[in-house]
Image (cartoon, rainbow, N blue to C red; front, side, top):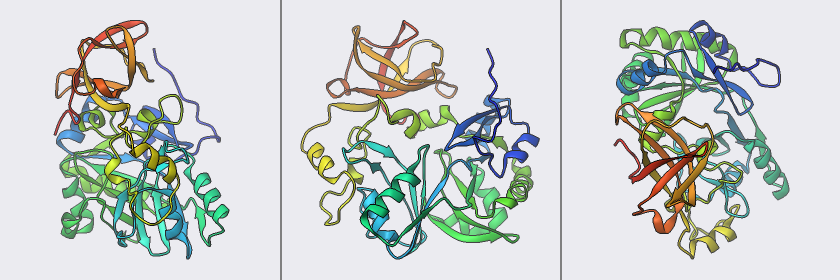
Length: 371
């Protein structure tokens, strides 16, 4: 069964939209109120390019929440329990965001562009509204906006060669999440060593949307000798690599989670003397062991992919949920990630994933599946 997504004005097109259409995009999803390519007609080839070669992705839907002004740093720190006091200009940080009750509401990468200017490269949610409300409630001198910034990702083991061809060999020395403000043939952008895969790569944060076609074509041309091709953030690779997806693994509904349940405990600094959203709740949560833990699973057979969380049972009793599963070509088996009762997270027999009323046997597995 196939479905189509309607293209209408209520969901925005990215500045690379026309280029992806020319290059054969076959499916879109919606993310941060924007269309984002899902695949280009051959998911297996796209996966192979990511694992063995190089791929280019339109990830303009990975929107930036810009904090600017004298109190931008204050607001950035108030938004996250991670201590940002040692973050330098040109350095990115993975930062969990929580609400006042300690539930995770996003997990962006924060980029410090200047002492008075930060970007939060956010997952799928309206964090700009949250940040603007908090800044105004504090009376701080900070402007919250969504700038004209559209990331394009180059991912895969050959991504470094393509990026070096475009920007020079100095990019090989970038630390992960390190970035610089630069330009490419007059196109202003921020170049970062980052991306939603564990295969290595860079993200080009285009700062003038009208140059989307130009940037896409320049990357495509530079990557031609390395076999570059279009693709999209890959759910199979993200499960294999243990990457966390806010929208799938800890979204704001029945399967919401705390940072401690997701393994973010080392990022929570309760000893720092600054305040942050959820500090009191997180302090209470830190006193007791977690009751649930995130785990990996190997699932028997090739069950249908439900596209939504499904129950995880132990000897017929529900003990958690599976947020996503996929068939791994590299491992030749179905793998999954989910949340389970903490006392069962190390060793459990009789586990099953229940999809459309059918139980599929499952066994615990370390995350990541592929190192």
